[in-house]
Image 1 (cartoon, helix red, strand yellow):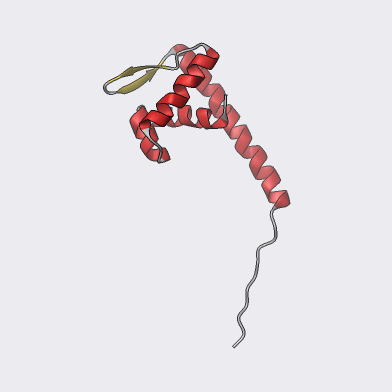
Image 2: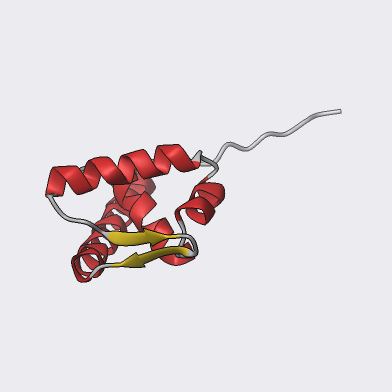
Length: 97
């Protein structure tokens, strides 16, 4: 399981469509589908039912989605907390004439 797969899953939930999620992430639909299929196989669950109008999350998928969102939020929190500490001071440039 990767953070990228979790991001894909959350993005699909926002748009209700794999195709729309792929567009918003600027990746191909086949890439996102493949990543989600790999995650489904790894965990042994089916996240959603696919149909012509988009996708509907299964009960297992909804439950996992909550965990995925929490993990991504925690990842963002940790990154923000430590990036601030290690960030270089802003550079100031001046030009003399």
